[in-house]
Image (cartoon, rainbow, N blue to C red; front, top):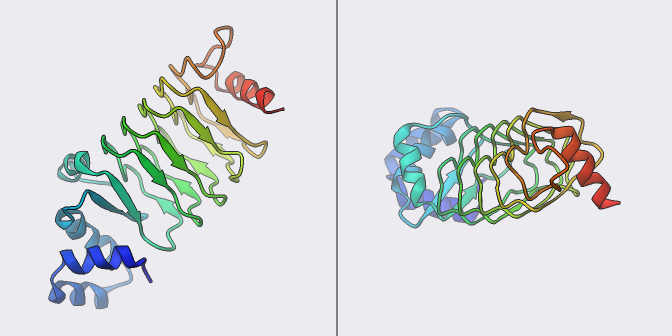
Length: 203
């Protein structure tokens, strides 16, 4: 089952014969169909599924994306899913998503707002790297347990982040060059020091 918006885009982008062939082929037809949808949707929307990897051509098209549509019931936002979507401003990640893959929102330089689900446990490597318009991140209501290396590196305007105590695993340089996130006496290259500061601000 998929959201009504997904179905509208799908039927508007794929010939009936193609749809039928994909629909009966395997349970993985969503991944095969995604390339066709990504190519055909002209409204500035992009379909996001749980698959990994993108071609250079797909990454070039992402520069035109202004919004994303998540497939229903996915548990993972795939690696590089929205990489280089430089005109993407707001993302509302749906409940049920447990992980956001490596580089998923890399260099989304216009991104200002991300809503995270309560089910989230993992943010991968460089997931929000170079999201220079991101100012506030609220992770307090999630179940986040792991932050990958460089997850928020080069988010130069990030000024606040709320996190919870369940966070256990930290990569290196998570907040590298995030100079506005912590006072000058705290080295932002030392992830644990920044996390300690953020937790102290929440008390």
